[in-house]
Length: 310
Image (cartoon, rainbow, N blue to C red):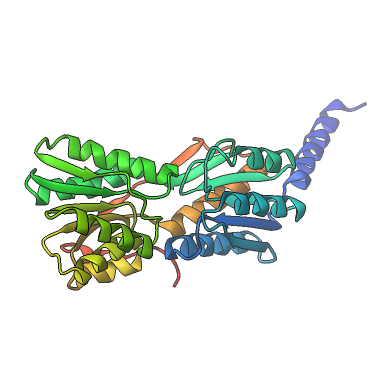
C-alpha cells in the first residue's frame, strides 16, 4: 500500500466531509419585545436582511411578544415546532425565559439574545447599556452644573433598562448636589407610558430640572406631557438615537440628548454570530457589546442615524 498517496486522499475526504456538514441558515425566528417600537422594527428588519444575504431562500418569522411572558413562551414553542435553525430573542424576562431557551437549544436550535442578555443563550449582542445611561446622565449633570432636581424614568425590568439606570446613577452619584426625586416609575418603554408617568411627576413635583428616560419613546411622551401642562425648563435625555429623536433634537422640544444605539448593525452582527455558531465557530466573547455615542442638539446635524437601508 502506498501510504504517501493515501494520506492526501484521506485528508481531502475529511475536508469534504466537513464541508458537507456545514449547516445552511434555512429558517430564522425573531421574537422582539414590542414591534410597536421602531427600534425593534429596525432590529427585525436588519436581521431579516442579513439572513437573506446569507441565504436568499431563508424563511424568516418575526413576531412581537408585547412584553408578555406567556406570549413569548408560545412564540419559542412555535419556532421549535417549525424547526427553525436560529432564534433571535429580545427576552421579556431574561431569567424566566431560561427554560424556553433550553428547550430550543435541546432541539438543536442556536439562540442569540439581542439588545438584552438572557440566561442560557448561545451568545448575546447588545449595546453597552451601562455606558449609554452614563453618557445621557453625565450630560444632565454637565448642563445643570451639578445641581438640581432630577428624575430617572424607569422602564420594563430587562437588563438593557437596568443597565442604563445603573450607568445613569453612577454619573449622578458623582454630583452630590443633584437630588433624584424618583427612579422607580415604569414608563413601559412606550410614548404613552412616558406621557402618563410624566404627568404624574409634573403633578407631584413643583420643580423638575432634568429627566432621564430609559428610551426615546418615553422621552418623547414625557416632553409631550410637559407641553400639555405648560411646564418648561426641564432637560430631557434618553437612549436610542431613533429617527423620532433626531427630529426632536432639531425642533422646539425639551429633549436635549440621546445616547444612540444601532439596531440594524446589532441585528446583522447577531445573525452573523448565530450563523457562525450554527457552523461550529464560537464567538470570541459570549457577549458582544456595541459602543453608544451621545447625540445632542450640537451634533445631530452630522449624525448618520440608525444604519439601516430605509
